[in-house]
Image 1 (cartoon, helix red, strand yellow):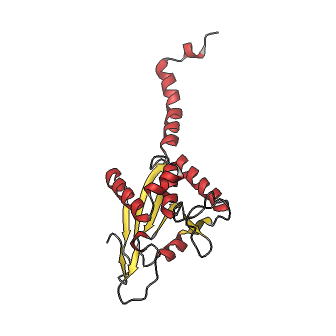
Image 2 (cartoon, one colour):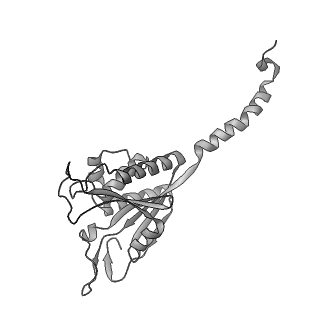
Image 3 (cartoon, one colour):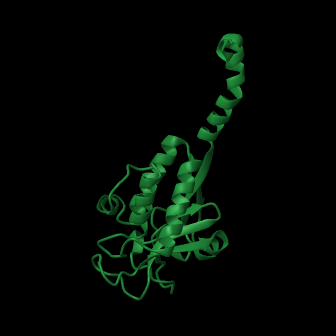
Length: 208
């Protein structure tokens, strides 16, 4: 009995395999989006009684949005640890709906950057955040992991930045301003979509 390969001409075999190849290519190239929201640091305008941002112009907040949820690194309790503690950690990952985040960021100067990624990376990042939301892997400390360093660390896992240790993440994004400037430069180079939300005129906003 002649083999199937001998019976079917080469060009017909290629045509039969084309749909399978096309399907694989579509699956591999399927993209999604992760979104970074960064609230600028700020100070109240003179002679006003606005809220106090502990970091001033170097304060603010950095979070990542995956699908309709916004994930950010924060702390519990009233005090920030000066250095990371191995016991009695106060770090926690927050998970907010998009509506909750918009309410939190209302009146703030916010830079939002839309980053295209492969769906596999998008899903991996979402799974990591869900796991960290249940069990936080590090402490929140002034000379340690905070919101910007955590966002840099997670973006490294997504391949946006070079995958980094926690120490390197802290050095490269010690505060939200450092992270924002890096991402704004990348957005200009990679032609990523970027949106600016104007903040309240009752505050002086960093970078404005």
